[in-house]
Image (cartoon, rainbow, N blue to C red; front, top):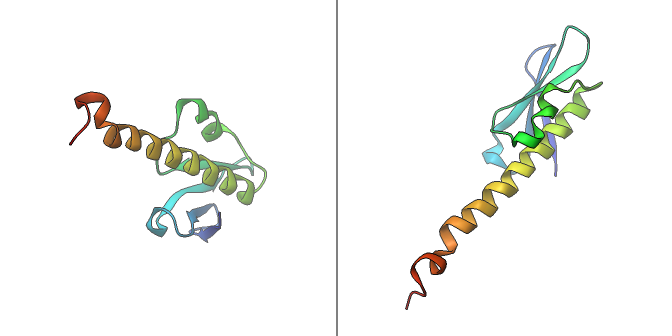
Length: 97
């Protein structure tokens, strides 16, 4: 997975995953007043992963990589749920002839 960073200001860097999400940003990392980096996701995060949004990171690279991993997790969940919803009609209606 290739990650690209776009500096928006000296305290904010946007994170994109090249070739995914229509090359739109998946979130950004922000420098806090404690000189640590924090994640701000532009997508819904699983409840069990929300602790990453509160965590402080030493570098913007580390925070960006964690953000990209969170996005990949959500993409896998969305694909799995979509497959279950759209491709298992046999379970609901019986085989289609």
